[in-house]
Length: 96
Image (cartoon, rainbow, N blue to C red; front, side, top):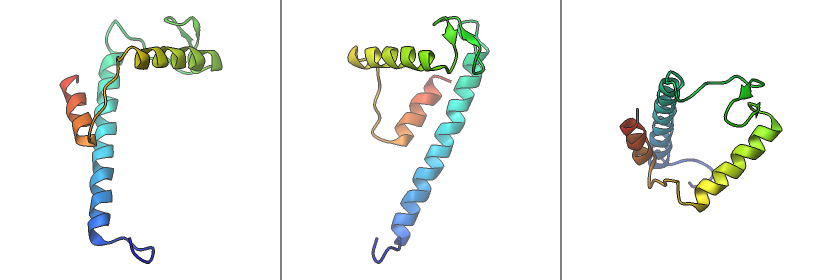
């Protein structure tokens, strides 16, 4: 970027990243919608009691409990990282 303006190449790079993000969001919605239809998972609205945690979904308690669970997953190595958005999307497609 020179003088506060984007070059055409920079603009194209941003557009490509934005398209990939939109694609990733669409895949994530599809995966989430599909998982809500399974017997293993229940989709909750804010304030409804989460049967897994026994507290209202979206409440401060719920956020604290899920945050602790996420940290435990990270410490245990139950995470994935991706080199690009395209790799993330490909992985989401594998599980949809």
